[in-house]
Picture (cartoon, rainbow, N blue to C red):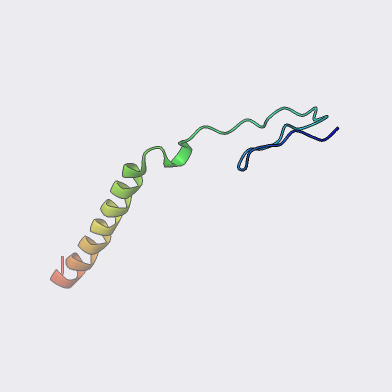
Length: 59
């Protein structure tokens, strides 16, 4: 007896597999709030720029 035909693009059923599907990790983590990193980078850049302006002005 031949095996049933499986349409293109579909995965055939696994035979004899005893493992369960892996758990996908949830989205987010450290990248949940990228605005926080943007603000930290901008504030750091402004502080460094202010340091150079203060040295040039002789403060």
